[in-house]
Image 1 (spheres, rainbow, N blue to C red):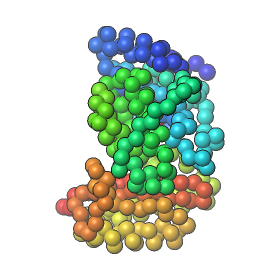
Image 2: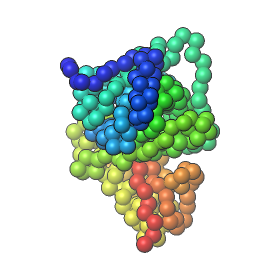
Image 3: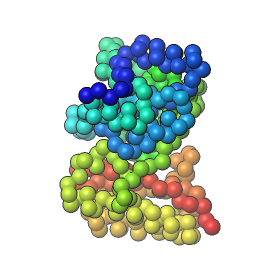
Image 4: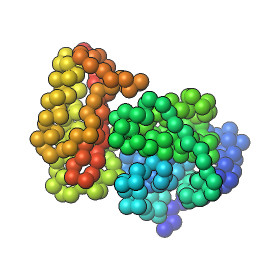
Length: 285
Ligand code: PAF
């Protein structure tokens, strides 16, 4: 398939192209992905194109961020289709390294962010965020973009990336991209493809329930009451809730009682599929 998108597979080729753009005083935005491109990724690429002169997308299914019983082997892969969609959204260069380019023989370094990685998704996926932090650090150092964009659907991931980019003085501006949803509210995710037809019908309840809880909290109900009702609604519909919590939107510290600004975050299984979502609690009127 011809996409008009140049594909590079080595750090040297990636750096050569980005250096050419920078030498011409042009700005570069990067959108890291694991492929299985959907409208959510495409909106990040469009946002990147609106913020910088050139957009580099990357596709790398990162083995370090999958647990032993997770779906690394089954994770959907299809480079030609993905490349066409990324090009359509405005990417000019695709960086698609193989595993030995990313993790050559002898690779022994891990990037670990304390505290932020131990809660929420980190509590049930122990090494996940070390894998994410390690690969994103490498991607940013390999590419050297001016801006890098990550979706707010992975809200905890976005905060962790902001933390280590700051801590390690990586010279890049991290930008969050709004969650893209199906018309019925389900957040777009590559893993939605795993849902059965029946589970797909139930799935939008996740977002509807979060919104309801956020509205209740914004109108003065305590965090505990709002989240207890939300959990009951989800469990009655067949969700197995991994976590459902309200946290500070910047530090991820737990919040309780009546709060003015927070983020409600959830991970819940429908059958075998683990869905995540989050919504802001709007400040009280
Ligand atoms: O959000 C993702 O798709 C991945 O976690 C990322 C940021 C591309 C790192 O592998």
